[in-house]
Every structure is written in C-alpha cells, then in structure tokens.
Image (cartoon, rainbow, N blue to C red; front, side, top):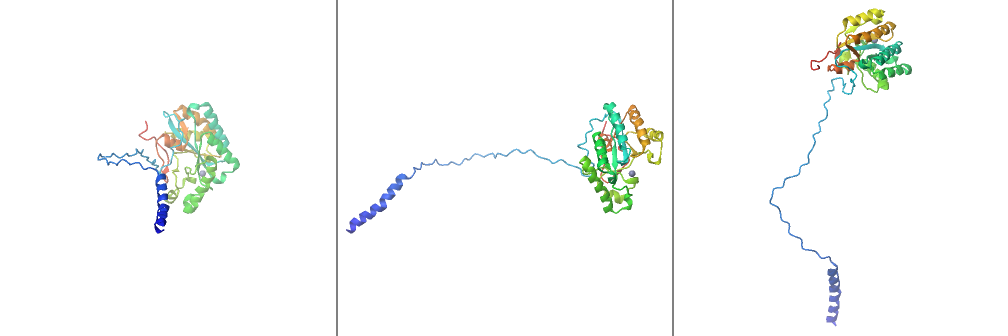
Amino acid sequence: MIKRNFQRLSLLFVLPLLFFSACRPTVKAQPKIQMSTERITPIIPKYVEVVPPTIDDSVWDTSHLDISHIDRTRKLIAFTFDDAPKGSLENILAVFAAFNESNPDCKASATLFCNGNLIDNDSAHSLQTALALGLELGNHGYSHLDMTKLTAEEVRAEIDDTDELLARVDGKEKHLFRAPYGRVDEAVKATVSVPVLDWTIDTLDWTGASAEDIYQTVFSQKLSGSIVLMHDGYPHTVDALKRLLPDLKAEGYQAVSVSQLSKAHACPLKKGSVYIRARKSEAVK
Ligand SMILES: [Zn+2]
C-alpha cells in the first residue's frame, strides 16, 4: 500500500518535469569568444572646431553696414545735421533725393543727430524717409542739454530715452552720439557707451551765415575724412547743400554718413572716444 502510494507520488513529480523539459527551447552551444590580441584603433569622430566670432565690444560695429555704393576711388566727406528732426528736414531730404536720383554712381548720405524731444509721429515719418534714402540716425540727447552739467544718471537718461525713440524708427539699439554744443568731459565720455562725434568743419550755419558763407566754409576746408557740422532748421543750409553735393562730386568727393566713413576708411570708432574726423587707414589703398 505504501509502495503504491510512493509510486503515485513519484509520478506526480516526475511527469510535470518531463513535460516542462520537452517544452524548453533548445539552447544551441555558443561559439567560444576569442579575445583578439590585435591593437584596436579607436574611432574618433572628427570635430570641426567652432570658434566664436571675436566681437570687439569697444569698437562701433559697422560689420552689417552696406557700403557697396561707395566709390573707393573717391575722397569721402561726412555730412552731419544736428538738432533734427526740425523744420527744414523735408527740404534737406529733398536735396539728397534729387541728387541721388541724378547721380546713381555717387549716391550721397549723411548722419542726422536727433533730439528725442523733437521726435513725434510726424517727424518720425520724416526720419523714416531719411532712412529710406540711406541716411543714418544719430543721438543728440533728449532735450539738448549741456551734458557736462548733468549727473551720470541724467546723461544716461538723455541718451537712453533718445535711443529708444530712434530704435522705433531704425530698429537699432544704440546710435552714435554728438553732445549738444560739443560739450564733453571725462565724466561724460565714461558714461557714454558709444563713440562721440565732434567735427572737422563748423559751418556756423546756426549763426545766420549765408548760403554762400556755408558753401565757402566747406569748400575751402574740405579734406578726405572730414566731418561737416550743419544743422536742421536753417534754409541757408539747404541752399548751400544744393550746391555742395554736385560741386564736391566734381572735385572727386562722395558725401557719406559717419558710420560709412568709418567703415570705408577702415578707421574704427571706439566707444567713449571723441572723433573730429575719420581719415583713411594706411591699410586701405
Ligand atoms: Zn545741437
């Protein structure tokens, strides 16, 4: 009896084992892995070295400025108009437009140094026309104050508020700076984060000088790299300009903006420095 029971129990254990072993997948004998004794040359991915462009933050950036219209064989002279946008801007722009239309080989440009408190919807429209003609916008402070009499904070506000208004017209965050009355000291230079532009030739047009006087002042003092100081708001300035553009062309000159002059003459303008001209670099033939 005990023996029979033992046989039954054995069958209970053995039969499932047989069944499972029959269902088990056959494991094939794996080939033995042989370790190579040869030296393995590692595969190193080739990297292209990416060098970030070195931007000299102390220099006024003209890298995106198009100067393809500038004839490199010509002498260059930069016209600047302070206290813009004022009453005679439309007439100044009309002179540039007419000259450029009849002289596509020698297109003229200039820099308009603007006061923030003169920029409203109407005058901003004139500034847009100026941009379309290829002129440059510069900063002349918000309310035409003597910067040497202001605190650093006040100087910054005068400049930043004007930059903001100009940016709505030309989309640029910063603009070249011309101090009202040309008044700059070390404290102002240290506060201003852009180049400061003085001038080579002062036309004194704001004193009531005649068109003839203005014309003669520019014509007698002109040199390549000169920066001419004029103002928006005086009809005699416009009359002088009408004669100056064609006569300067005839003398081998092309009228340009200050930034164009700096780039074409390879004469970098440094932030916080004051410039009265931008002569051609020795490196430029
Ligand atoms: Zn001024």
